[in-house]
Length: 324
Image 1 (cartoon, helix red, strand yellow):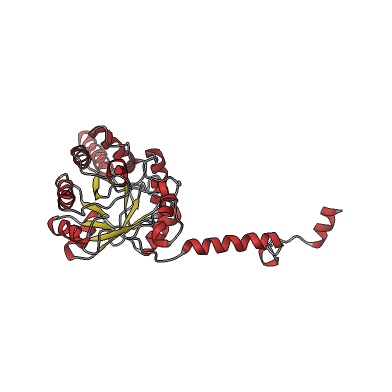
Image 2: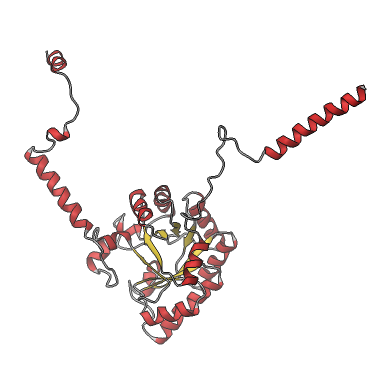
């Protein structure tokens, strides 16, 4: 009888342990909320982009550099939010994209990640962060995802070293967008912001480099400042989406810089050479300037703040005691 009792007690202990073991991977809300389930109806993924490409539905991409711009992209339903190294020009005021650092890009990435919940988030690898070696490229890409909160990275060019870097990053488990045509990080060898693919050899090079990036594992390629027939040829040959910027209407999608399409401002470079491909959908800069001038005038004249904007009250007796 004592032996039977011991067996029952042992069985109860085992059942308890088995129950705990089975339940141990289910987090309790009071301690740890666990990973948030992604709503595939809302969050854009590579699978969504592949489906769009397969169905011939154009893909939309816009740059963003901070929380407010990310919220606007999110609200508008943009597919891809690119934290571009163009921040160097439109946010930091440089003449080129070259000066911005990885640490500066990470600040922009984190701000955008907090504001955009729906789009696929892509961070640019800035100049000087992936050219030295594949290991440097992978390390930089890892930081963009781990510290910046991005879903993927973008890199420019298709020289053998860039192809090797792209392949290494993909093999490290990180999604990559390539970028060919006018590659702003290479203006020193391109001789400035010059369109590419305007003769046979240059056009062939655009298509070949796009193919090389596809072979390296990129899930999309940006085609910048190339003639529409060249972009159309690349789009028809590639099995991955092409995202055009100044590359005509035949790409799989389009991308524009946030400040450009909104007419926010003219940064130092655009003050000299406004892109011919850029369509301004608004003149937000004019609205901002008008509001700032109106604010200055009202403060100067004393009309602001008036009673409507002085809401905090104190009783007359309290004022008497306060001033007495």
